[in-house]
Structure formats: structure tokens, C-alpha cells
Picture 1 (cartoon, rainbow, N blue to C red):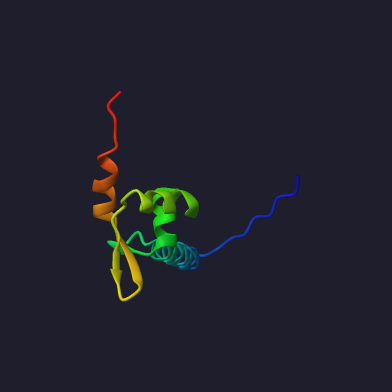
Picture 2 (picture 1 turned 90 degrees about the vertical axis):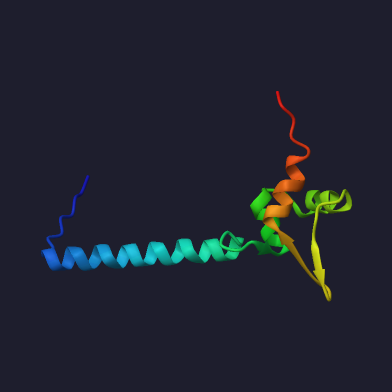
Length: 93
């Protein structure tokens, strides 16, 4: 197995660590935004990710009363209200 050793100065190591940290933080934050993890009100696609459900399954829950907000055709879902609604169906083992 071939091995490569790279020698970096302390400053270069710190700069590399800061760059990697910045890139990872940026990607995680972008992922949170896309999934609506930083928002209380989310759209349907984000709700599918939040609940780990398919669009079809989510449609069935909506028909059965899953709470939604409709403002002039813009449909949003309140994660807190959705969680409360789902909790009504939890069963103790």
C-alpha cells in the first residue's frame, strides 16, 4: 500500500481545519434549510421529509384531518400542530 505524507505548518493546519469546518457547517445549515428544520411552518415536501413519509401517505393523512394552513392557495404546515395531531394516535404498549 502506498502512503503519502504531507507536512504542514501549524498555520496551514489551522487554516485547513477552519476551511473544512466552514464547509461542513455551511452544508449542514443548507440541509436544515432545505428540510425546514429551522422553521416552524413548512411546505408539503418538507413535511414529507420531516415525517419520513411518501407524498401519497401524507395525502391520506391530510384527508384524515392533518392540520394545514391555506393562505390564498399557499399551503403550509405547522410542525407543532402536526406533532400534536399525530400524538392523538399514539398507543401505549
